[in-house]
Image (tube, rainbow, N blue to C red; front, side, top):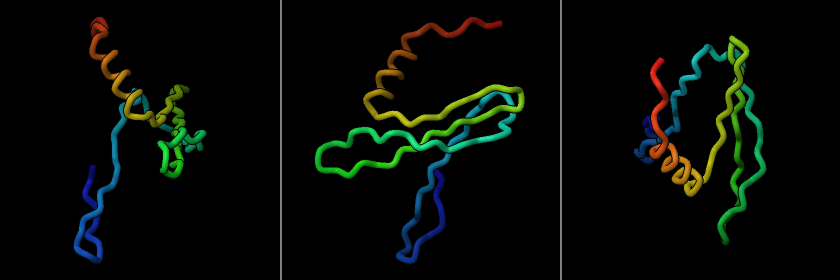
Length: 87
């Protein structure tokens, strides 16, 4: 998170930011609306947006938000997998 400008009340806003290594230069990006995930009881559904990226070498990448439970399952699977062989 990056700390943004100070508000009128003296508080600081946080901005979400991230870096992704795609392996090539990104030549185009499109934000795509996703179907809303079913919200927990008593809360409003949140708007979800995915990002589709096109590389200069013809590659395609996607960034899609996942819920906390799915993230934890995928992360635990990634930790258990062996590392890729060195070339």
